[in-house]
Image (cartoon, rainbow, N blue to C red; front, top):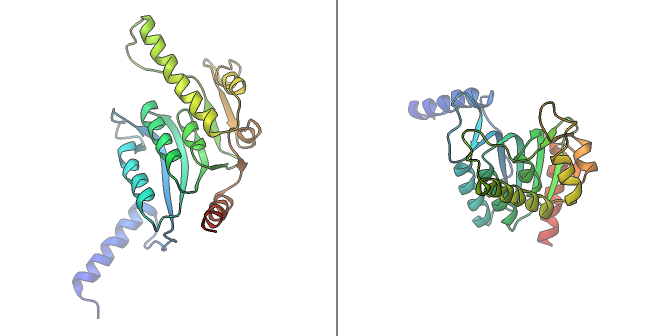
Length: 228
C-alpha cells in the first residue's frame, strides 16, 4: 500500500514532467548511452538574457567528464539545435567531446550554426537531418573593439583555431572551408554560407544525412565493434 507522502511525491513528479516535457511519465531508456542536447545559444563567460534558450557550458562539462569515467556508459550521443554563441566556450566543449575515448555520434536537428559547426564535427561520426541548416562564417564580435594590430591578430588566431579544429574533425579541405566562410553571395549584408542537409554532406563537413534512429543505430554498431 502506498502511503500519502509517496503519493504526493509521485503526483509532484508527474506535474513537473508535464511542465517540462509535456508528458506525465517518462520511459526509461537504456543507460549505456549518454545523451546530451546542446540547444539555443551556448552561454560562456557572459550570461545570456533570461528570455532566450541557452546551454551553459559549465553544465555540460561535468556530464562529459562523468560519461568518460563511468564504465556503464559505452557511447555518447550529441543532439544539436544551436544558433552558436560564446566562441571559446563552444570550442572548449568541442575539444572535450572530441577527447572522450568512447564512441561518439552527433545529430544536427534544426541547426548547428557558427560555433555549433565544430560541435557537430567533434564526434567520431556525424549526421544531419534533411531540413537542418549549418551557417559557416568568420568570427563576429559585438561591443567596443580597439583598432590596433594586436586586436586583429587575436581574432585571426581565434579564427585559425576554429578552422584547424574543423579540418581535424571532418573531411572538408581548407580551401573549401574558407571559401564557404567568406562567401559574399549567400547571406544578405554579411559573409558566410548556409548549408542545408545534404549540402553539408556534399562538402564533407558532415558524414551522413539521417535522423535519430539512423544515428542511434550507427552508435550502437560502433559500440558493438569496440566491445568485440
